[in-house]
Image (cartoon, rainbow, N blue to C red; front, side, top):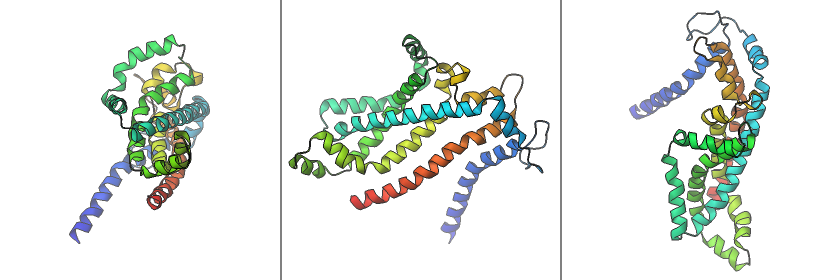
Length: 270
């Protein structure tokens, strides 16, 4: 009984840590700029003008469109490249493949900001500033080691006998991957989509330097305009944050359902 109570208290504390920032965000979003009451106290009114102002003043609709284009393109590219790269790394453990896998995983410990200066110069040289394809390639490059790590580990758990049986039936390596291995990757693919999608959607470090024109800026860049050295507009920033959370929340709920069903199918097939 004591262990059960302790587990409930632990779960409650962990949930509270994650819910308190969201509670404060909602309180601030529905308050006026002149409201000086405590942020912990919920407002006795609902001031919806903040959502209207942030939508019209910052062109949040355009920022959401830009962010969606970059996110969808980056996620699709990194998943395609990561799957195709992980299959030979998992199925053909040669010395060269092991070296490539180790080299790829080792790049995870390199902070992205340490290569920002040469990266910016390279993007300038290829005329990629203020373009979606350049920022998409940057995201693909930096998330690819994580995707390779996840896919390679998952493919190694799939029995090799499936490949051998397909080879006996006359399938080549491409047919084996797309007909047999690819359908079994649904659980890890859902996880990869969730992780990469959130990372690209919330990116600020690369977008700040590579997307300088207002017409191509993303949601984090647009919301950062409410914070400056001399003035902070927390209600508008909070309202914009809530609006920007809606697409990712819906996408997460949609993918979570497929993620759970994919895990069940993978367990049955295994």
